[in-house]
Image (cartoon, rainbow, N blue to C red; front, side, top):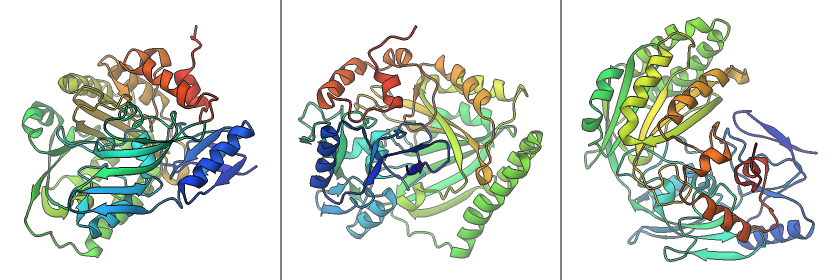
Length: 439
């Protein structure tokens, strides 16, 4: 049997057959064929999720890599209809040709549009919407092969966005884009204590995040504001030297060396910060170029969202744990912010949130122990009513999550209606939504 491996190498599994449809009718045909043969179906995107949300042993896989075109684009209204398998990188490049852009996005552009939406992928800024909040309408292929057209007046509108692949297959997606715009990006370094103290001030910036470098007491502050200034000119050599050579190749080599002497991670974190992040910088870039960062080193990530009012207390508690010296950890801890979201399963459902993401690298594929670190941060943030990013590692039980999401049981009922035979169920979804209570 063929084997599927995700990007980070955190999991692999054997599957029955891989389909690569080019049309909605072909997607429907695969689902109906699987229904008739009583086989599971799972859509796989670009494999960037390090959770096991896409792991489906012995299932029929659907890759939407060839279902990747923009079908309609109206620069006057900003409405863009696209096939859900389009990669964010390709989507943004094509939007630019129409004079359009996404209002906000994360630092990685290699996910499919469907995968980014289904897992709640986001950027940063307490007034700036996640990708699922930029949806105007979409079509959904259910577990029976029915195609449902969903707009803002449909009862499925908020339920079917961040849906973890549990309700069906996102097919076509109409986005509400904005006119292409430029951002003036300013970065500078400060202490963690000062960054936390000035959070209310920093949050006045439309786009704002912190990159915290453990064991250094240093933070890079990243702020961006829309501007009409001309875009900065950066040589390709300078970009390659800083972002690819130092930021990826040299950094990965350093991470590999520190794997043999973990206590050296402290010194390595300081070196990376001093080389790449310590100096203040200002530049003007088009939004897509400002958002995206080239990341090539394999990694495992855990990211939780907490109410924004608890950010300062949570960060201080994390700092006390990390600086206690019980563990050495990789950089950076990424701290981002998001507005309240009405998507039922969004991390930010009905609350403005602070996202805290931690990371463990796997240089050249070498496995680095992460469990003690991740679990300790889990326990810290769980005390602050944390919710997990579905595409990343988390340690919440279904019972604990049910208490965190007001629409949890409504979502389970919809899942039973739209996928009555459990066509899209895998072990990940079964653990979350099984009706059996754990002892």
